[in-house]
Amino acid sequence: MFEYKMVQIPPNVAVDMKAHKGNEAAAYMETVVNEYASEGWEFYRVDIIGVSLKPGCLDALKGRKEESSQYYVITFRKEK
Image (cartoon, rainbow, N blue to C red):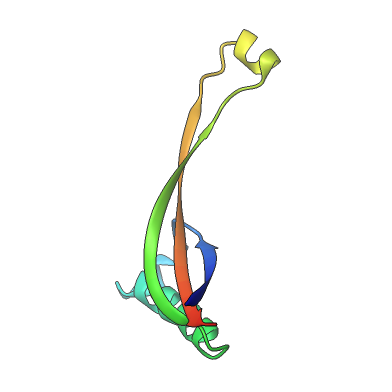
């Protein structure tokens, strides 16, 4: 049996053009995974989860449309 922990991460990593090396996303993920590994969590997978944001009554009357966003979630696990 496993216990699971989900951690939402940003969809983009901001980097200065001068400091750009091409491995920033991997370095960011490595930092997050190692942080949770030090607490006993094992990296399990990364998922993309879509969320639809529906406008409220007033926004709908003003013509605002439904918006969609994608979020990235890292799943960790450890034995109970």
